[in-house]
Amino acid sequence: MGDRPIFTSVIKELEQQQALLQMEYEYEKEEFCKQTETMGIARKVKRGVCWCPIRLGKSYYNSLNQLVIELTRSEDLDVNHSFEFGRPVRFFYQQYNGTIVYLDFTAAVSYADEMRMVVALPNTQALAEVEDKEGLGIQLFFDETSYRNMFEALSEVINAKDNKLAELRNTLLGKEAANMRNLFPVRFPWLNGSQEQAVNRVLCTKEVAIIHGPPGTGKTTTLVEAIYETLHREHQVLVCAQSNTAVDWISEKLVDRGVPVLRIGNPSRVNDKMLSFTYERQFENHPAYNELWSIRKAIRDAVGSMRSKSHSEKERIRNRLSNLRNRATELEIRINEDLFANARVIASTLISSNHRVLMGRRFPTLFIDEAAQALEAACWVAIRKADRVVFAGDHCQLPPTIKCQSAAHGGLNETLMEKVSKRKSDVVSLLNIQYRMHEDIMRFSSQWFYHNQLQAAPDVKNRGILDYDTPITWIDTTEMDFREEYLNETAGRINKEEAELLLRELENYIRKIGYERIIEERIDFGLISPYKAQVQYIRSLLKKNSFFRPYKKLITVNTVDGFQGQEKDVIFISLVRANDNGHIGFLNDLRRMNVAITRARMKLVILGNSNTLKKHRFYRELIEYVENL
Image 1 (cartoon, rainbow, N blue to C red):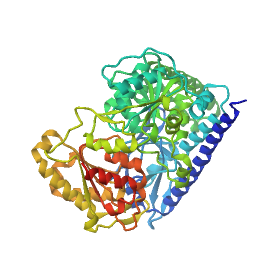
Image 2 (image 1 turned 60 degrees about the vertical axis):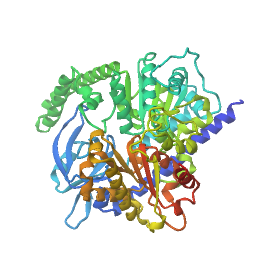
Image 3 (image 1 turned 180 degrees about the vertical axis):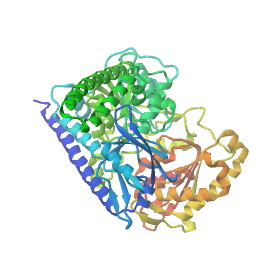
């Protein structure tokens, strides 16, 4: 009976998650409806949620027996779009009076890259409608499926009783200690001490372990080693992440180690190596696939021919169809069993772990990469399939994307990894040697976010580009009287003079290094701003300036979120905010700033108005830190 209050508090916490997720769901759906009704096509295209106009390509049945159509966008805009595998979409066209008409069905993205998309249609009637219209566009539709999966998972976790899921729930969220096996430590001479300890903790845990990887500390290397070593003890594991990009990254590293991976869902970066381990490609390459394809075609032809047949002929066709469908089902089951039997790692996004091909499958261990960016409910979608879970990530970097601020303040932004880290510090392994940055670039982040526990590896601690250069420069725009402008809720704020100054400073720095050395050594540059409008303005200035043309492939401009997981030799950051009352809005999210200031290997340049920013302790101390170097 003593455990009853603890159990009740865990259930209440999960019910609170349900309520907060409901708030986020309703807010996002309402915002989506508003945008659909009021936002013009051009703005939707710029936001990356719409392609218009589009050109239709061929249609065909894919290996999953889905009717798909290929399409391309007509303009190569410098916009990062949000189309990716599994996301729902709607086709639309414009009438002569400008009214937008949506076709009356929802489709789903099967594959998307920068210019081309493959969309799965619900039926042949939908295909006829699409091919019948001119001036078509396509836009993302509200994603009911992801929310349905998360609500379903939370309900299952709340109601779990006397099973493995109930045990995991009570261990992860309750006060009881996590159990460990006593195993003799394994030596990994190619890892550092903290990485080796993390892998051994993963091997010993019975329920949960956390690999906490600050910037540049080799989290992916450690996670791959932990998965590889686990596979010496278990036949198969499930590896998930919040985004397709993160799943691709860890999958590719595992394939490089010779691990057979089965990737559920299509990769976001497509090349032959990536495609070779997707479920769809492996399904097509199975020896029995040709027979299955022929049977499916025969079924479609038989169904199509029935309309013109007599009653007796229809009955004969129905009998044939029954036999064909039975044989098709047999082949599908056989191919599936072979694919899963041969794979050592099943990889998917957290939401795609609920994909129909994974129904009824269980795994001894679930690894969740980038777990600090995943909503708690999304993690539970995958945890339901596992006996134990290993989180990898850094809750001092980017948080989950939450649109409803009330839900975020209510606790939806606190991830499951963060909760377990706070409650069970003994399961956390902090990776403390970083291999990316000059020691001076690292130190402020280490002091503010990681209790001063990070150390720079000897071969990077003094790395630099120019002699007698400081690793961090603060360019104070206070005396220049630059002013921020508010554009709209989507693009946020812009500071044009600061953007122009950034490019002048970048040009000066490039001139100091020299063209030949930059090209020969492939020295690369990242230009970051927290605001989309500033990013787009900097991109437009770069395009117009002929000086930067030879360096085009070496310069990347993006938001902080777009730079997660990346690193560059030189980073310039435009903080944008410049006002008299110290309002800094988005810059209050210090986890985003941690990402921004830890992308640089050798040189970090920050542009900002110190009068505006110094009113916040973080920026005041950052400016003082840079001044004292």
